[in-house]
Length: 531
Image (cartoon, rainbow, N blue to C red; front, side):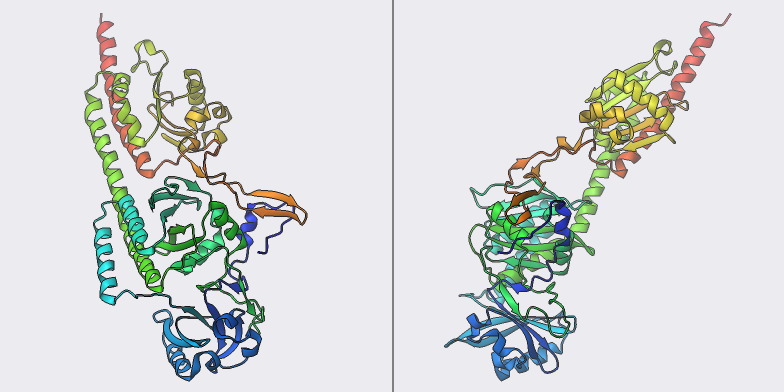
């Protein structure tokens, strides 16, 4: 297997530049032909054509496809090529392979003015009847329709693919806004190591690989130990460039990904794209520890299940968002109804401290007040709920906020980057949501979130190693996938808009309470000093 050689200055961004769409070879469980129309002349073919049809690749270059398919099958191919290949691109053939007649399925597509024909032998001993497959798909669809939320949809999707595919480990992998992925659902055989909840860095699936997943619903790697079959000739004689194999099912696999799979202890994979709208949302990833080539019937069923799951994703996300907002509004309503009944603002906030934290999904809350109408004698007071910096650190932070804050709300998920002293307490306050309760910016509510390390577990060290050998510096995927906590310095989980809105709504009620208390105490002071 050819390795990717790099120089001493290389970093993981080199993976982003690996030309995985033009590998110049295929996986050898099928054979690939590049044809030009209208003569359907073979201008490129995979070297393993000899293994299937007994003819050396160079001997059929510039010959008509009839030399392989025969007249009748070639006529069927010509007829199919006149149709919309996006709608109809799978053909059935009975071809002579040695002394036997072998069933093949042909996958057909066009690119760069070339017609690509991929032939794969059919190994189904007992093909699933159309009615049986229809019933299975309908049962799966019914289960998916009953999913209440996104997590349940994803879990059912894993379970159904596990039942269909024959692979012993199925995971649903969701991308975040930075293309890191998290395993949020899983179905597996007993004894297989769980990856549920683990996070994987964006470099594991670089941008050009994600583009290919967006173009192809399904990708099969039957055996990582395969020997690639090269295209003959290596350069396409019509375009003068390597063949673009973006849409080829047999496309050979990146050497880096092969090593990655071996390091993970995986021999075969089936990957199904999950596409919401026009964006790659996630992947259904199937693993097996021995060579596995799923039947074409199985592949089609898995692809269809992936498409059904994809069609439900946006609706479930909207439902989950609605339910989360409803939860926030319920807590908000409770606070707005109960806090005005409290005689003392600070004591009321402490009394409902747990709800105050849940309202914005924070770990700590500091109530900092200096208003003489809110505190006794007008002295400074700081009350803490949950995980917070110490009082001196909060006082210094408030002084900084009073100079930096524009408006009445301040939000950041990277406080130590903006306020250097926060590096000393980043473990409890890398994220800050603050609201001002006075025009002179002396009274605050401060919600804190810890570093993301507190909630992030990676599937192995996400940093790929660079090793020195006799051929120079080489880039290799990591070898360990055991749970590993990375220090994500000085950032917290981001604050959602609904959480910000809840804090703003709460501020309105609290300002009314401050005004009420001020008026009451002003009247009390006037009465006490009345002559």
